[in-house]
Length: 126
Image 1 (cartoon, rainbow, N blue to C red):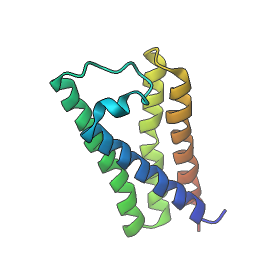
Image 2: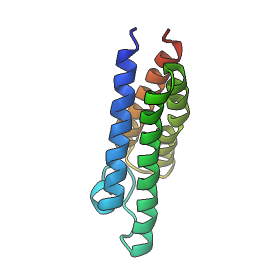
Image 3: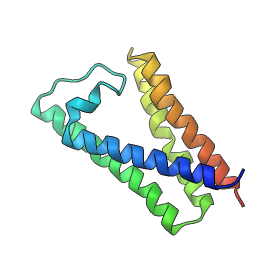
Image 4: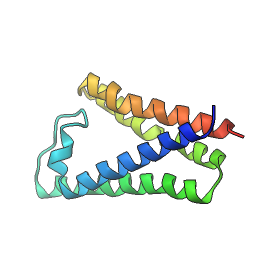
């Protein structure tokens, strides 16, 4: 498979997580419902923790986009494989915490699968 498809997937996942991160910073209550867990209290301290998640989401997306500009496909693929641990961990946490199974698999599981597939394809693209 030509490396364009996995690169497009990497861009879409990266831009998507940057947008999600921006929502966690700007309007955490608005984005929480889609995560798969019961929303936490909306007190000042909880909102501060959610904004920290947003900052990390934005940074994660920017790392992949930066590598796409500065590194070869193999290195981008390796980073995607490592970063696939994040949606896998989110999915596992939701399942272990009694959250919404449908969201765990459809949002976090699918994201993990896309990142794994794109990462593996990029590593083996020559």
